[in-house]
Image (cartoon, rainbow, N blue to C red; front, side, top):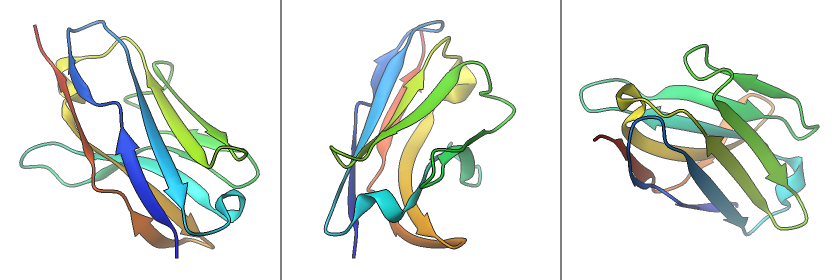
Length: 116
């Protein structure tokens, strides 16, 4: 069973950058497809970015060109580099591990607030 812990959230001004990290433990990290999701107040959780065990990436249209997902299998971590942040990026960001299309674990979430 994999456990996930996110870090790196905080308050940033519009146009700024943040880097989120998700540390995995308890299982073989490299076999999992990893994703970052976010949930804004009053809205459903949505996929932001995903990276497969093979390194293929996918992004929501709203963040394409601004966010970059990456993984370091040697350190059991996945990162989300967020640039050119907008107020509408404000949300709790969650890390997810999955395999064969099934979600297996969620982190506790980290809050990102974009505001001047």
